[in-house]
Length: 158
Image (tube, rainbow, N blue to C red; front, side, top):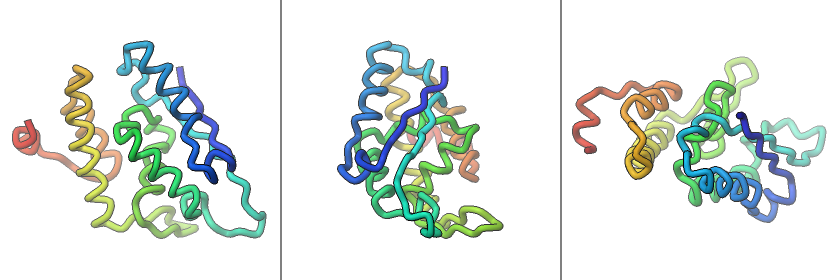
Protein backbone atom coordinates (compact mmCIF):
# COMPACT_ATOMS: atom_id res chain seq x y z
CA UNK A 1 0.00 0.00 0.00
CA UNK A 2 3.00 2.32 -0.52
CA UNK A 3 2.07 5.75 -1.83
CA UNK A 4 4.55 7.65 -3.99
CA UNK A 5 4.08 11.40 -4.15
CA UNK A 6 5.76 13.06 -7.10
CA UNK A 7 6.92 16.64 -6.58
CA UNK A 8 8.21 18.50 -9.61
CA UNK A 9 10.13 21.70 -10.29
CA UNK A 10 6.97 23.79 -10.67
CA UNK A 11 5.59 22.52 -7.35
CA UNK A 12 8.84 23.42 -5.63
CA UNK A 13 9.37 26.80 -7.28
CA UNK A 14 5.77 27.83 -6.51
CA UNK A 15 5.75 26.36 -2.99
CA UNK A 16 2.78 24.29 -4.19
CA UNK A 17 1.90 21.56 -1.71
CA UNK A 18 -1.02 20.19 -3.73
CA UNK A 19 0.61 16.80 -4.51
CA UNK A 20 0.86 16.15 -0.77
CA UNK A 21 -2.47 17.79 0.07
CA UNK A 22 -4.26 15.50 -2.38
CA UNK A 23 -2.82 12.35 -0.80
CA UNK A 24 -3.28 13.53 2.78
CA UNK A 25 -6.90 14.37 2.05
CA UNK A 26 -7.51 10.86 0.65
CA UNK A 27 -5.87 9.32 3.72
CA UNK A 28 -7.83 11.56 6.08
CA UNK A 29 -11.11 10.74 4.36
CA UNK A 30 -10.37 7.03 4.73
CA UNK A 31 -10.55 7.66 8.47
CA UNK A 32 -7.86 5.15 9.38
CA UNK A 33 -4.64 7.11 9.27
CA UNK A 34 -2.82 4.42 11.27
CA UNK A 35 -3.09 2.13 8.21
CA UNK A 36 -0.85 4.54 6.34
CA UNK A 37 1.96 4.59 8.89
CA UNK A 38 5.31 4.55 7.07
CA UNK A 39 3.69 4.19 3.64
CA UNK A 40 4.68 7.41 1.83
CA UNK A 41 7.67 7.94 -0.43
CA UNK A 42 8.58 11.10 -2.29
CA UNK A 43 9.78 11.20 -5.87
CA UNK A 44 11.44 14.58 -6.32
CA UNK A 45 11.78 15.63 -9.94
CA UNK A 46 13.64 18.91 -9.60
CA UNK A 47 15.45 20.15 -12.69
CA UNK A 48 19.11 20.91 -12.02
CA UNK A 49 22.01 21.65 -14.31
CA UNK A 50 23.82 18.36 -14.91
CA UNK A 51 27.09 20.00 -13.78
CA UNK A 52 25.56 21.03 -10.44
CA UNK A 53 27.37 18.94 -7.81
CA UNK A 54 24.81 19.52 -5.03
CA UNK A 55 22.62 16.84 -3.54
CA UNK A 56 18.89 17.59 -3.69
CA UNK A 57 18.88 18.37 0.06
CA UNK A 58 21.42 21.12 -0.58
CA UNK A 59 19.18 23.06 -2.98
CA UNK A 60 17.61 26.05 -1.16
CA UNK A 61 14.39 25.97 -3.19
CA UNK A 62 13.79 22.32 -2.38
CA UNK A 63 14.56 22.88 1.30
CA UNK A 64 12.15 25.83 1.41
CA UNK A 65 9.40 23.65 -0.06
CA UNK A 66 10.00 21.09 2.71
CA UNK A 67 9.97 23.83 5.36
CA UNK A 68 6.53 24.86 4.12
CA UNK A 69 5.43 21.21 4.02
CA UNK A 70 6.59 20.67 7.59
CA UNK A 71 4.76 23.80 8.75
CA UNK A 72 1.52 22.52 7.18
CA UNK A 73 1.87 18.87 8.22
CA UNK A 74 4.30 18.65 11.17
CA UNK A 75 3.14 15.05 11.78
CA UNK A 76 3.84 13.92 8.19
CA UNK A 77 6.98 11.92 9.15
CA UNK A 78 4.58 9.43 10.77
CA UNK A 79 3.45 8.54 7.24
CA UNK A 80 6.91 8.47 5.63
CA UNK A 81 8.53 5.14 4.75
CA UNK A 82 11.36 5.15 7.30
CA UNK A 83 12.80 1.86 6.03
CA UNK A 84 13.50 3.31 2.59
CA UNK A 85 15.24 6.36 4.06
CA UNK A 86 12.42 8.88 3.72
CA UNK A 87 12.75 10.02 7.33
CA UNK A 88 16.48 10.67 6.85
CA UNK A 89 15.82 12.65 3.67
CA UNK A 90 13.00 14.61 5.32
CA UNK A 91 15.33 15.48 8.21
CA UNK A 92 18.05 16.49 5.74
CA UNK A 93 15.66 18.98 4.19
CA UNK A 94 15.05 20.64 7.56
CA UNK A 95 18.24 20.16 9.57
CA UNK A 96 21.56 21.84 8.71
CA UNK A 97 24.05 19.23 7.55
CA UNK A 98 27.12 18.54 5.48
CA UNK A 99 27.14 15.93 2.77
CA UNK A 100 30.26 13.83 2.47
CA UNK A 101 30.62 11.61 -0.59
CA UNK A 102 32.06 8.76 1.47
CA UNK A 103 30.30 9.23 4.83
CA UNK A 104 26.91 10.47 3.65
CA UNK A 105 24.89 13.03 5.56
CA UNK A 106 26.48 14.48 8.69
CA UNK A 107 23.80 16.44 10.58
CA UNK A 108 24.57 19.36 12.84
CA UNK A 109 24.17 17.50 16.17
CA UNK A 110 22.43 20.29 18.09
CA UNK A 111 20.06 21.05 15.21
CA UNK A 112 19.21 17.36 14.84
CA UNK A 113 18.51 17.07 18.56
CA UNK A 114 16.13 20.05 18.41
CA UNK A 115 14.42 18.58 15.33
CA UNK A 116 13.98 15.18 17.00
CA UNK A 117 12.60 16.63 20.23
CA UNK A 118 10.20 18.93 18.38
CA UNK A 119 8.92 15.97 16.36
CA UNK A 120 8.53 13.90 19.53
CA UNK A 121 6.34 16.60 21.08
CA UNK A 122 4.31 17.10 17.89
CA UNK A 123 3.86 13.35 17.36
CA UNK A 124 2.96 12.74 20.99
CA UNK A 125 0.07 15.21 20.87
CA UNK A 126 -1.01 14.26 17.36
CA UNK A 127 -0.95 10.50 17.99
CA UNK A 128 -2.93 10.98 21.19
CA UNK A 129 -5.52 12.94 19.19
CA UNK A 130 -5.68 10.05 16.70
CA UNK A 131 -6.10 7.50 19.53
CA UNK A 132 -2.90 5.77 18.46
CA UNK A 133 -0.56 4.31 21.06
CA UNK A 134 2.54 6.46 20.85
CA UNK A 135 5.38 5.49 23.17
CA UNK A 136 6.93 2.74 21.04
CA UNK A 137 6.38 4.73 17.83
CA UNK A 138 8.11 7.76 19.34
CA UNK A 139 10.99 5.66 20.61
CA UNK A 140 11.35 4.06 17.19
CA UNK A 141 11.41 7.41 15.41
CA UNK A 142 14.03 8.75 17.80
CA UNK A 143 16.14 5.59 17.37
CA UNK A 144 15.93 5.89 13.60
CA UNK A 145 17.60 9.29 13.95
CA UNK A 146 20.13 8.08 16.53
CA UNK A 147 18.49 8.98 19.86
CA UNK A 148 17.37 6.88 22.80
CA UNK A 149 14.38 8.01 24.89
CA UNK A 150 14.01 6.74 28.43
CA UNK A 151 10.63 5.61 29.74
CA UNK A 152 10.81 8.36 32.37
CA UNK A 153 10.76 10.96 29.58
CA UNK A 154 7.26 9.84 28.59
CA UNK A 155 6.02 10.29 32.13
CA UNK A 156 7.03 13.96 31.93
CA UNK A 157 5.15 14.67 28.72
CA UNK A 158 1.86 12.98 29.61
